Amino acid sequence: MLIRNSALLRRLRHSAFPLLLVALTVPLVPVAGAERPAALRGRSLGSIVREDCGACHGLRLTGGLGPDITASALSGRDVGALAATIEHGRPGTAMPPFGPLFSHAEIRAIARGLKSGRYLQENDR
Image (cartoon, rainbow, N blue to C red; front, side):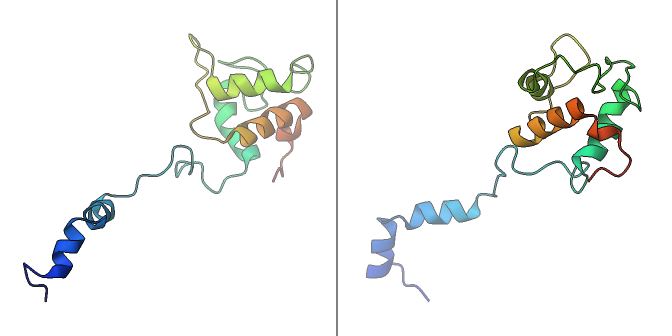
């Protein structure tokens, strides 16, 4: 039991204790981009590309609402430019930014995979 006028209480009032108390009561806020949304967790990048990107770019990635993103269509494109498009989207089009959902390394891996045609293989892992 703590007595109101105790020396311990006076010392704690003037120390970092009040800040610690506040810090312990504030809910933890996840760091932006630290964790993917539940719909993406546990899925390989290949399945995400085939299913999510395929929704606009076609099931074979040969085009639909979005343009053809097969390896042959992207042969002249730079991996960095592709990664920038994936990360930031294309304003004024249906292409959304995926930067909030993936790390920069994951986005570059997606761009490299698109250029190589890897995501059209059935068992991509």
